[in-house]
Image 1 (cartoon, rainbow, N blue to C red):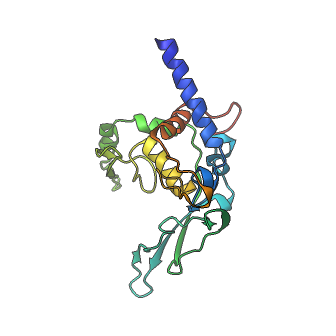
Image 2: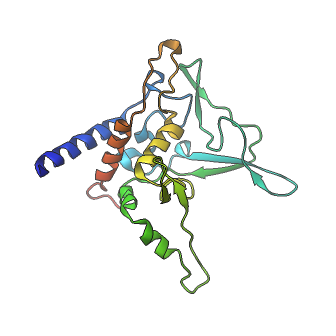
Image 3: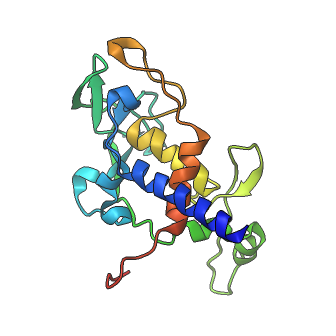
Length: 218
């Protein structure tokens, strides 16, 4: 039983690695807005960080020049301003930056080695650390609702707004590749596809098994 389970886990992780390194196309669900055509483009190694600024995610907003207040921008390419778009569902072109954006924050793609470990930390452990240590500094756990509708402590994403590793993978497919569940247009010869839970679980399984390469520095 244990041998079969280990083999199944290894097979799932191998499938996840393949998806991680796949160059997605419009026929495979890429777009309509995206930052890269594959996960490995922004996480080379695979799974490492990228210092190439063309891979940096851009979060945007509008700052009122009078009040200084920052407000969200109602636009398809916001609050994450993707760098690429599909024209006529096929040609890859530069995506337009919303004209209202006057605040841009760059976010470097982080290394993913060991990232799955955060998924294993109990909520109670994180909450127990959100107390004053006597130096005037106090943390606060960010409680969010996961994809199953359960309230959890956030661990991933922008200000820990994503609860689980699987939710983080699904969010990356949607925001960075533009691949979402059953959203592919039938136009331009595209075939309807579905970003299934199996694909998300496979990539999550790969990340759970991902380790720092031998000889590499953390």
